[in-house]
Image (cartoon, rainbow over all chains, first blue to last red; front, side, top):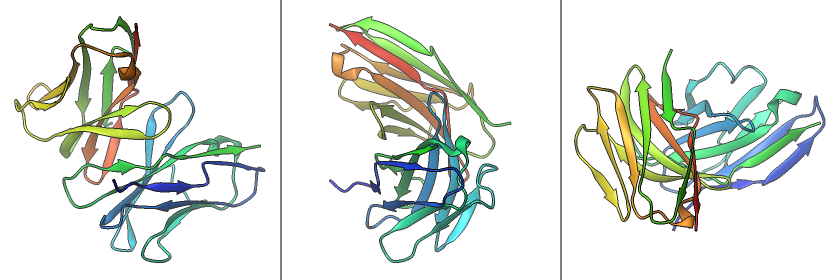
Length: 113
Length: 109
């Protein structure tokens, strides 16, 4: 069964460093997303991406964040200068078309120290 | 402000019990309501509901949406220990999902 894959599963980084979280969405999907879940809190929307551009972003997704689809398969989230409060589980999700369900990857646990 | 509220926050039952999880919402530009099960990491998809009154069913799980009263329920009959998880309700607003805090279900033998 096709699935969304994310790497790495866990990343530890020092405050101020740049990190790139990687995702391979399901191959025939057209809409891509990043969500995050701080420990013990709700899953929160960060950004949606369609047709090679951001279609919507939340207040969390400030200038420190960027997304890219560098080739036909990968979808990345970059955090330029990490802060302690960026520590969270980051989920990538994709869906095929409008009004279909989104499928989530296993997540990358980011720990900023 | 858009919000999704789930209740109860936590539920402890014995195997074989039936449970009902609740989700109410106040969301502009409602598109659909989704239920996910989160065991360790990734939310796994259960149901997507777009129309009122039509029950979706998968094995022992079922769900229904009421768009007039702005809520949905998820029922699990004959619970098993493998049903232990956090159940997330999410509402699609334009192109994003707005999640509730989840209901933590623990099923004991």
